[in-house]
Amino acid sequence: MPLGRKTGVPQPVLMTLLGIVMALVPQIPDVSIEPELILPLVLPPLIFAVARRSSVRYFKANARSILLLAIGLVVVTTVAVAGAVHWLLPALPLAAAIAVGALVSPPDPVAAVAVAGSVGLPRRLVAILESEGLFNDVTAIVIYSLSIEAMVSGDFSGGDAVLRFVLSAVLAVVVGVALGWVNTKLAERLDDPTQQVALNLLVPFAAYTLAEEIHGSGVLAVVVCALYLAERASDADAVAYRLVGNAFWEVVEILITGVAFGLIGLELATVLKEAGRGWTGFIGDAAVVIAVVVAVRLLWLLPAGWLSKRLRSGDEEDTPFSWKESVILWWSGMRGVATVALALAIPLTLHSGEDFPERGRLVFIAFSVVLFTLLVQGLTLPWLAKRFELDIDQDKHEQAVRQLWWRAAKAGLNRLGELEEQDRLPAEVADRLRDRQHDRLARLCPENYAEEEAAEAKLRMAQWRAARDVEQEMIAASRREMLAARSEPGADPELVDEVLRGLDLRSERK
Image (tube, rainbow, N blue to C red; front, side, top):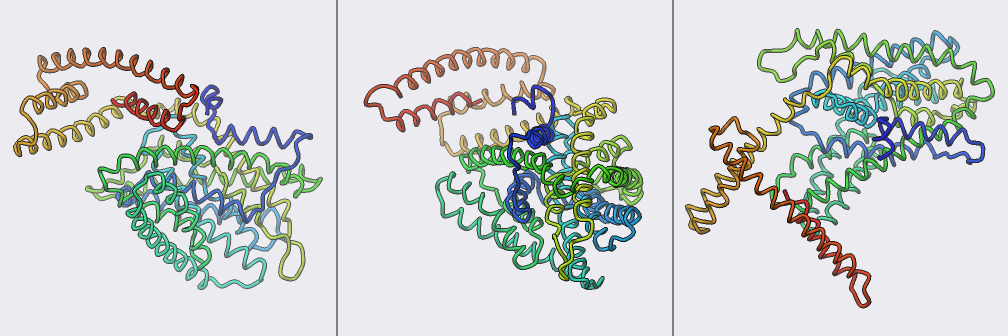
């Protein structure tokens, strides 16, 4: 997003601000969407896009940190906020207070990752925020649903609630794995990578809808399905699918993130209308809940890091947080789409026909939490990360990338040796390919080569880059010629575009 890059404002924050401005302009009509449609339309693709970047291996390695945040912190926040709301509004039934606690408890994975990524936080912190966001919605939505059901019907059983929570998770896992398996089998029958990616787009919606229909967790089903597909994306030759798929999901994530957070801002008019003319009297209540949400996250994270360190065995990879990392994770708890959708989905009436008590006030409180965490925390997180010097250690990052390139290049050299032994190519061709590969390795990892070898490789790479620059000029001239040919009488645009695609691929080749 060009404006976001120029201003340094993360996309979710910027889109929310733009939505608020539009909502406050009298000439722009109120924009609203049915609350029950927000989660099914927005969450599945966003959750899927985030989850497909992770792996089961990562979740296992960081299980303790993820569970402390995604389950422990959500439950503690729910209880604390419910207590605060019940103290502020003694006449409000406890079930309604718990529902409010649940809907403001889960940080939004897309908002947190977008803000953290724009700040340049270390990959470990970004990954923890991603994982927390993927699973905390599961906990929060189940607690919210049970509380609203108890509030509306007046019937609640603790044992049934625990059983439903477990059953919801089990059903979600079954649905996620089943749809992942079906998607894999169908994709094997499709040769066109575009069709395979189009099939992928349907999967998160199908997983979410099917799981919800059988009273499972739709969010967890999407996460499980994405992880299943990521684990089985093992075809090393599926280059076209990876290129198309990665580009496609990047675009989907940007578009839906923009729409979702723009919608949060646009819903301001709806929220104020729900609250009525006395909404200014709700500001004090909202401030108390915001303070509780922010304080509980801090008070949970600091001892959680200490507890994780005490419980950690020597061979575990789940490295505990430092106090600075804990503070950054604390301030990265931005709320977003799920909180707004759940707040707007609070029923208007009870089974008895009475109005849902204090609905306008509760929606206003939830919306205030979203705005504070998105705008205040989102805009100040870059300053905090810079002050703590927790931005990406570029040297370590580059070293890790070089090590991976070294591993990949060595695998290529080993394969070249095997092909040479099988007399699959002339010796001079093999030597040329080997020299080219060693030149790359010497450029990336000069510490692994003698000084003289590294210098020679550096010289050859400089010559290659000079030739590459000339080749880019040639390709640019070819593109201009094809663009001119596209407008000529009798030219077939599809054929010209096919040649242009080939030129673009040659231009991007490293």
